[in-house]
Image (cartoon, rainbow, N blue to C red; front, side, top):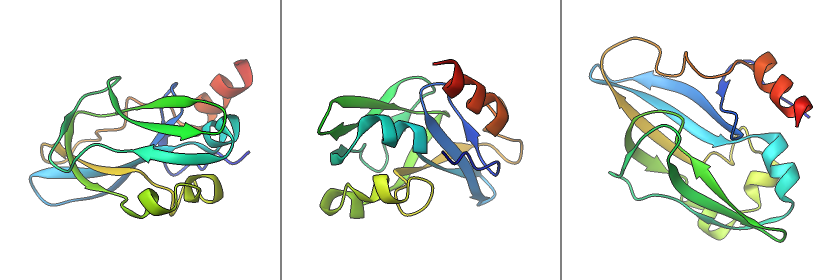
Length: 134
């Protein structure tokens, strides 16, 4: 399974990728990993937070429902939801087809100038070790 090295990961199987900064915050795009979508099976429903919702690391911010189970999606960073992938309401299977691209879930605006809001998360090699250990 693919684990792109251009992003960071959580041990709960979310990925985070810095999209850019607007001077007052850094925008981080979040989705679930290829491993997670594969383990879930066919995704049939996605519940995402509202734009403007405050999120914090390790706290649930939505759900992904498959034919097998329902799984929480956890925020990897502290911030405010800046955008949600509205296409997923009509086509949740996009997550299965393209978990690292069109299947993204939310953009989170992380307050503060500069810095690396996802630096404390797992890199691709460390995440792969988590997957292989489970």
